[in-house]
Every structure is written in C-alpha cells, then in structure tokens.
Length: 241
Length: 183
Image 1 (cartoon, helix red, strand yellow):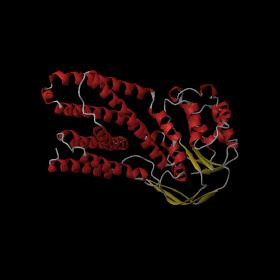
Image 2 (spheres, rainbow over the protein chains, first blue to last red):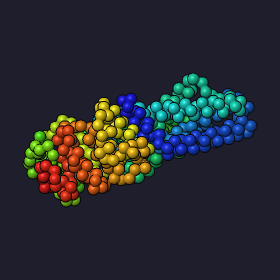
Image 3 (cartoon, chains in turn green, blue):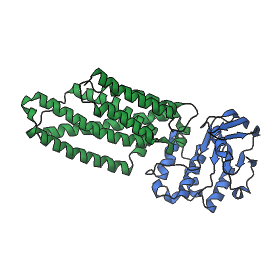
Image 4 (spheres, each protein chain N blue to C red):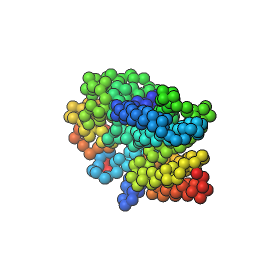
C-alpha cells in the first residue's frame, strides 16, 4: 500500500499540478487578505463582537471550501482518471487495492491542503487582529463536513468526468443543493447524503466484475440526477435553511 | 495451456466468435486484420471484459496494451522500478533490458520527453520484467523501429511463461518458432 500511495503521489504531483496548486494558493491568500481587511473596518456587525467573529469564520470557511472544491476536483481527475494507466496497475495490484489506495492518497492530499488553509486563516486573522471562531469543536466539525462533502464530490466528479452530460448533471446537483439554496445551520446534511449516494451509484459499476471501462451507463447518470434533484427538493421542502 | 471453448463477445451491433481450440505452444501468434477480434480475445483472457463461453488459462496473466499511457512526469527508471516494487519483485534484469532496447541513456528522463516508439519500448519492457505465467501482447511492434522490432522478437525466446501475441505485421515474426493462428 505504501508503494502504491507513493506511486499515486508521484503521479498526482506533476509539474502542472504543482504550478496549479501554487497559483491557487496565491490567489487564495490574496483574496483572503483582502477579505479580512474589508471585513474588519467596514462590516457593520462588528459592533456585535461574537456575531461578527462567527460570521467572519463562516465566510472564511465558505471561501476555503470553494478553493478546496476546485483543487480536489483537479486532483481527483488526475488520480481517478484511471483509463490512462489503469490496465497496467489493475493487473498488478488488483482493482480493490488500487481503489482504496487512491482514496487514501486523496485523503492525505486533502488533509495537507486543509491544514495549509487553516494555518493561513489563523495567521492572517492574527496579523489583522481579527477575532476568529476557530474553536477546536468548530474546526473538527468543519473538517468532517469537508471530508464527507468534498471527497465524495471529488470522487463522483472523477468517475463522471468522462461524460460531459453527467458532469453537467452533477454540477447541477451540486448547485441545487449547495448554492441556490440559502445558507443555514444544518445546510450540509442533505447534500452530504446526496454525495454519498452519488458516490455509491457512480462507483458501483467500477467494481463490477470483469468490466474495466469507466464509461458511464445512462441509467447511472439518470439515477444520479434524480438523487441530486431529490436532495435539493428535500432541503427546500423541509425549509432547512 | 490455454483452452478456448465457445468464445463469444457481443458488441452493440457485432458479435466476435472464435471456435474451440487449444493453445499449448510457448509462443502463439494471433494473426488477423483489423476487427478480426484479436484484442477482444486477449482482453477476455486477461479478464478485462465479460464474454460468453469458457476460457481456461494460467493463473497469472498480464495483458500489455497496444498503446500504453504513462504518468508524464515520471521517469522511465522510477516507472519500471515502481512497477517492480508494486509486485514485490527485484530489479534484476532491468539494466540488461535497458541496454537491449537502447534506453539506458534515457532512463532518468520523464515520459513527456520520450517519443512514441520509446514509450512503446518501456511498455514492452515492463511486461518482460513482470514474469507472468501468461503474457498477452497486443500489437507490440507498433511504433517500434526495425532494430527494436528485432530485439523484441529475440527477447521473446528468452521470455518466461507462455506468450500470446496479436499482430498483423507477420514479416517481423518470420524467424520466430511459434504457433500461428489465423483469426
């Protein structure tokens, strides 16, 4: 497994990926600093102290999340886009080991990126003397949400990416559950569930005996769209925002 | 020994079928034009596609793709050693193979710096290092220059395990002692 993870990291962190990561991080830092500067002197809710801190943390979290989605989508594309070299690897290590090792690699990368972003958040906040809401509980909660949501999303994207229509449907599902519906306290529960289901559906065919092609069957695309749509509707109907 | 019984693979509009036969030579050449079902049969033997019928094959099989894809930033050396490590094999024979295929000077270069033919050489070398009971080559000579084609054919004689090789380029295999099957 160690060798396999090393192989994936080698494959993942190509020159192009490193440049992409660095650019994204620089952009992230610039926006972050600007956001912090803008928030402190101009946000009217600063008078409420704690509320401001909470609100600020939420904005920071949202921004981090957006960055992560972009980066993870890219990583998962690189990593899970198996058809390029899957035959040689699958035959050597087996489909299950390959799949598990890819997930482990993605988790490692995810944790490293999140740690960098969180250190950045703390550092920038301290630099501008902004009180943040980075309690241990809040961080753990955010981490778990990110993992559930975005690793699933990344996985789905990777499997679906070979089919433009399914990409569109997946992003529609994502937008429906995440962006169109306003923010709320438990906003992540339903989309997270949708991602889990999407992942299960998307990966089910990957594990089918004998079939090596990642090409998507129309029924899976349809099912995914239905799941995403239902998740969005559920949130709207339950007024969970 | 390989036994093929009632093999059939259905695609959307076409059906590929092969009659019953037994392959028991060390080297077997599958000969046939485009669309004759060479790749289908090889993939079925490797367990990469579903099919109808019965295929009796050795336990450890390796299918070598016609066009392999490589991690572009990885070096030849890292790739070949990485594959050996994944299978917990030693690198014994790697230097010799690099010499045989004239790649020693390029071993520390990334795949993006290699030509199509060089990549094909690495593809073939990775299979030779794997040492399986059955190795299935799908058009292995594609992209190789004349010298490398000769090298490959020579190396087949020293190859471990059984070999089934699909090709439509018969001239290069004229000197090779092998069973020839027309599909």
